[in-house]
Image 1 (cartoon, rainbow, N blue to C red):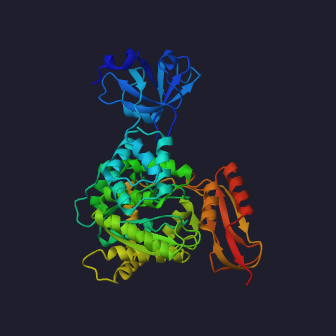
Image 2: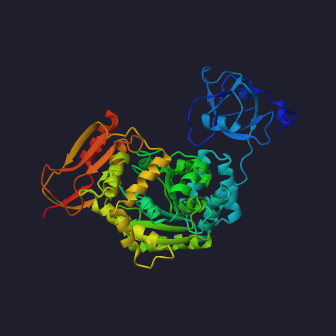
Image 3: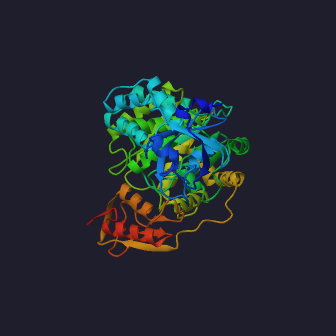
Length: 511
């Protein structure tokens, strides 16, 4: 319990007010400019403050915003954003005290990293602890991210950061020696293999509890896409129940406090469009280890517009993954795949779900490339099973899919998680982007096509995105549709159309 008499200058109390603003992973407090404390104690906008209550043992840290509108926060009130208000856990009107926050000691390590110095485990641990405890503002978190990205991280540093991210959160124990998982490093639109892998692996009898993130820079993440079919926001207790029944689930990992610093780092990386190698590896592996995985497949697509451009880059990245995985006690295999163009036909949650269900139901127009890639990866995972000989995994996976067992398992998982009985629809606005010439499609730019899909509203609008009519190697006639844009709102629709008409991401060779 805090003795408020110990606060410097016996600062008077303020009344707590919840300000209905979602500041997304950042603690923000609001003080009226005419509040007596504002000038008497020298508080300034964007400085950090400590918030004490009469019953708290540790203060909560927040970035201060100054307001001039009493309807937001009155002169005798301290307004708190939703994020920090929930942390205090006391009702509005309660008495709170504020004080200047002491800068985190770990910022010295951030300054060293910016200067190009190598950090050890303890330094990374203290940085991550302060980030998890909301002692860093987003500006300070950005400094850490940029420092790591610009000066680089040695392989031991990546290991230290991974350890620190795991050690500052919770870990799930599924009670089995073989727990499967898979992760793609991203960058390839429509690459929705996970939603096919999970029911195939579970139908084989292996454990594959899949906690997935929402999209960071892509038009859809696995959680965004699965949400079209079922509830993905489930408690850890419910996930354990589903696993005991179905051997798998496909859920959002945000409800469990697994490597919680990762969510904060991602919230800053997203607007910066930064995804450095070291932090990417630490982000992926810390979440997988915390989620209880023992055996992991990493998919590294390579291509001119993928995250990894050459086979040599992929091999270097594979060695880093293997080094960290080995030292963290994780059985890890890296698969290098074709990332020269989007996988499947749909880009965006509803459209990607349609691709997945066509494959599960064995429809004749199901996208062959997505099906084949999923079977190859599923085969590799099935071969983790000690009762399966090497080379047999693909045939087993194909039999599970084509026999309908994967579809049956997927439906069981959907029902267990809570089926969405009101199917989400494609965006009501649609527009065909057509070829300007006749020829053969030589290339599709992954980054540009993903950008168009995001401009259309994906993944926030589940029905927004792109349906590809033509892929690399296809012949196309002038005026024939290359792809169709779907959007829900006029502004997004216009942005996407304008971007596509400026550069539709397709290169057509005159052959």
